[in-house]
Image 1 (cartoon, one colour):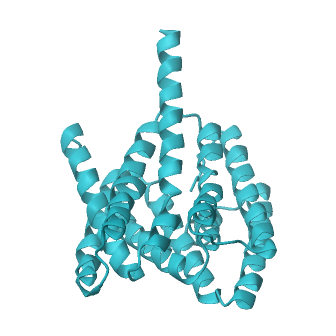
Image 2 (tube, helix red, strand yellow):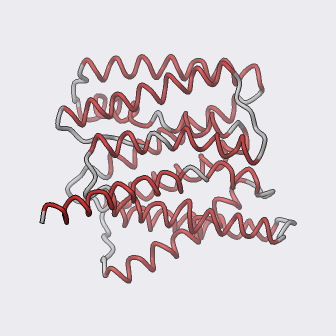
Length: 288
């Protein structure tokens, strides 16, 4: 029995690792597709919703409809839409790392909306992440990426909404994910008909976004997180903001400035350390 549990645990860890790798391909595929950000987001969400829909049918998971799920779905629409836009307006590194600031906004929202007093580690993490974000914005002004950086931070705020909506007793994460992706797909996919490039590489990249980066990644993550220790999960998901710009640099040739790199180290390092601390303290890790 002990060997079986160990095997299942390692299988869950592998699922989280594969999910993080799948999530990390988003920046590259968005850069490779010569469509508008909204058209890309519509197509990838519609495909992702179809993949998750098949998963729901196979597992006989019933959709949950309530206020919490709907707000989570709205947050999901905001996350995917703003992330796609930011990837077109700034570097992939800036887009993913600034989205990775979501746990900080969770801390702020919990304090402002629910009067949850932040702990010392919360305050230190917020201060460190703020420093890293400032470096990104200084770099953004210099490189003309300011609007993209602002959009990426807004994506992080929406991501915080996703985390918070998944905390409630009536929450159902996969229902919020499916409904949000389906809505975004229905709203934005018609914009694809205004695009000109429907070559095989473009369509394959769109398909990869929907099947791998959206649908498949979320299913793998939902399967793995159930049996993966919180500390392990927080460390593994910290790979996404590292791998994302790496794929773009290798296959697209996009470089990262020294200032942005310094900001990325501060933001990612602070969030990962915070997640590890939360996990050790017995709380829930807010991994991106």
